[in-house]
Length: 284
Image 1 (cartoon, rainbow, N blue to C red):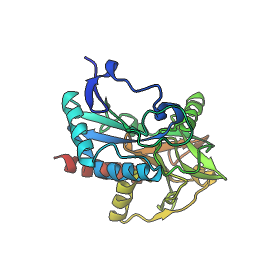
Image 2 (image 1 turned 135 degrees about the horizontal axis):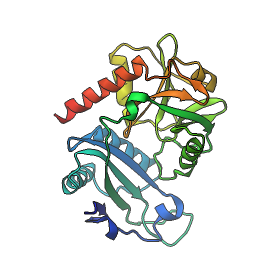
Image 3 (image 1 turned 180 degrees about the horizontal axis):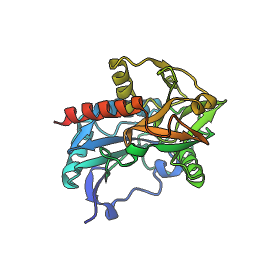
Image 4 (image 1 turned 90 degrees about the horizontal axis):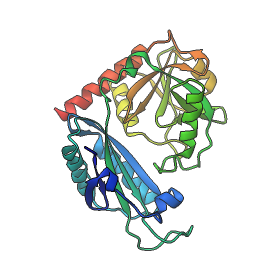
């Protein structure tokens, strides 16, 4: 049986889900999105995702399709209709359909699409062995703090990683790591300090990032939010990423450099366990 998806006020089988060929998300990538995790049929950190969605819409002067409460009702209806125990809910808002013109159209009705993806996010087998990444040039636009659907550059980065036999890519600008292709990037120094890029227009302020940073502070880890170089990555004691789809995931190889002993590090594992514990407490 096919998934039930939501498109502009209707719950329909995925094969019947359609938007206009004139939708500006299709024409111009004029849209934003969010991805929320689902555990035990409950949304994780969803309030944070709604706050960021509203910020993205406001930054692009885009109309809000409905209230946060209405979106959450749609999300839970999709969870129910698809019997989703564990996985993700993808949400996308575009400026809507209008005849092709670079200038924003006036008074268009936003397009709202949501769908579920069943996925093993809690006991992901990758977590036990860690992932490898390569560093690539960051060719994205200057407003990476807005979570837009313009994801061609990250797709290209992931394909570069795949071609190199790696799992993912970390993007680099002026010799400094910005973030992963679809996640926030961190290293741990030999002194045990967690280092990650500071918030600004250069990176997306991840919802999982916020939660993990709070957990790290709670557990008295030293944290530095600053620029860090590729060379620092290669000599780090540990490295990891955070995202709604991976939670906390250790990185065990960056380019040709093996990180630590080539296995997920102590701090990476502790933060993953702490995040999962908090998430499960939220749904119990």
